[in-house]
Image 1 (tube, rainbow, N blue to C red):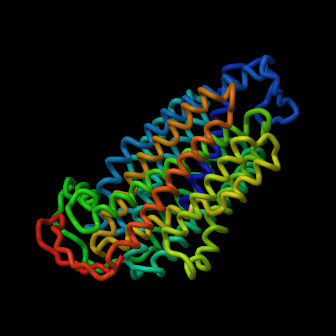
Image 2 (cartoon, rainbow, N blue to C red):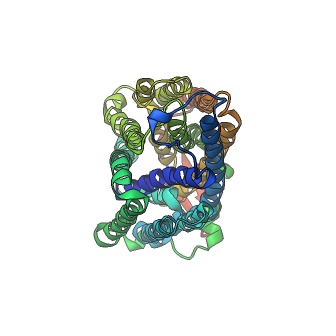
Length: 452
């Protein structure tokens, strides 16, 4: 919760600071304000509208570069971080990850304080991703949950609870971000980000117990072997390889349909005809994250009594399609605030797919599995954000909501793939299958998996 609070608050502060910085430096004599709805001119031929559109395009260009710098180092780190956690333990690797995120937030504070070129945020992004970033931290968290739970409904529920804690932290940051920004400014708001990130480090170091005894840790593996272990599930011949491939493809399309939304939504909300203030942007973020990560999670326990993971994920895809379609055509505040209510199930596809993959995997390879998932999530994050920014740049002057129709299309593809997985899973054998697989140390391990 602390980690997500700091990361989401950092994103909200940085995104709005970028628009403010561009607005004041590109058009220093302009009278319009990105957060003043009274001057929200929707006349496309007006000077104000053209200036606002220019700022939106410049901010979208920067978002592309930030996401690239967020991704490249994290791809390398996340590929090995899961294997390293299988070797050294989850807590040590999570401490390393949290420290780098804390350093990144401190760097952002320096950039805001000295009001220097916003492209220096790329340095902060590189620091953040060098430690694995958010997805590296989550991969360790999911592996930790797998260590202390048994496969099946218990693990699914605990993974979903972890998602709920993410939603609580994210929602809290959205709720307070606007008030913090408007009352103490961007710099001190980012100092709050630094303090929260530092607290997350302290919680890991002081309170988080080891999840696996030392004798169960894997030893004598190289960095290359750790990286390779994250992807052997999809390459190595086995009776379950087709399920692994289909499940990770589902996860990829779901991530593409959801991960690029927030940064685009903030620009969408700051633009005409909404021209929201920081407080309203924060309210929306809080409602959106809380409804999808908390309300959605609350209903999982009930849904699990009647439906399988893939069926719940299908409901999630349908919810995402409806929400993105409404958002694409919204022109009033009340309609836009209905979007997270309609899409409150949309994020459930992530814990359901993670649970599906985790049940297919032996206990000693959970860290490697979730590291591979983190790499896929990072790639999807880059593709979703860069693609959304490029589409928004191209369409903001004509049909600014077109990007959300693209997100709806990706949710539709995810739902279709889930239906295919459901059919394949029902047709597959349900008796336990014994597989002999080679682990990353080269020794043979006999693993007895549960039925699918």
